[in-house]
Image (cartoon, rainbow, N blue to C red; front, side, top):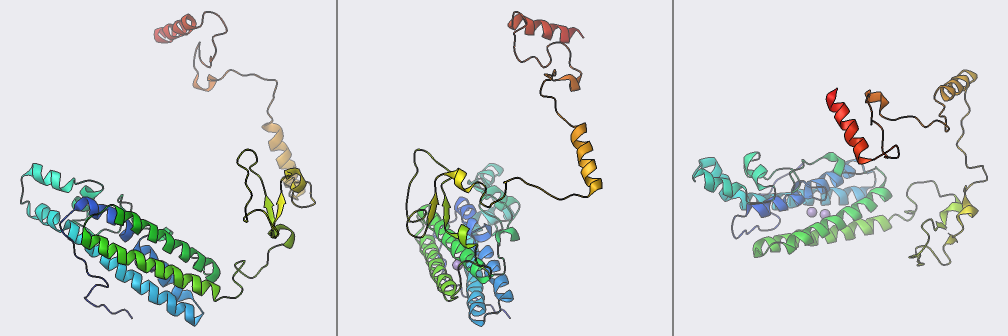
Length: 315
Ligand code: MN
Ligand code: MN
């Protein structure tokens, strides 16, 4: 069961209302790298997890992410508090209210549609979607994805910290950012606590392809590094050497029934293209003189086109 503690995980001290900043902060409320996405990612993974250690970890972090959702949502609510009241009570002249809700970013939508939020959208007003959660139900896949998700969240917080000079908000965002670093560390430890974590899953890779590096982009800028050269790699620079990678002829094939085979032949014959034809284009539109003419090789060029235009007008 969930229980709620009325105190936030981190104190929210906002200096003054700022609807434009509120709109930007929604990125971490209902955006792809935001707290709701993180909470749902770990909560659903935790429910499906069979390993008791990882289950505990995932549910701990999922619950903490909900607490972060509460912190970031509270900051948004504080930043919008003034304009929410002004709009609700119609306390200003129309022109002043108009200015107040159009503070920038997506702030007008936050005011008009969501009444000051916090809304489960990103900073552009795009509604949150479960598609942000990319779990596959395999711990070595999902932990890698979680590590990446935490690193993305860290970077987005860093960017948000760089655009506000409100000390209280900077402080709270710094806390949230730092917690994502701690989560990344936990997920890394959990990943490497699984001895057989690479490659993901049960099947090993096919040995002859597993260490092959294919230099498919060749020319100026070709580089070598530990990611493509050295004792762990068989580097392929001559692409013809590995084309196709198997001993086959590199052609796509399928065995068809006799009936399908004859239908395929009929289809191919009916839609055969004739490379010797140079058909007029535009005939589908029933267009008249000048249609399909993309060069002026016939005669005068410009006059020719004017002629055609005049004829078209006369019709
Ligand atoms: Mn978080
Ligand atoms: Mn996190």
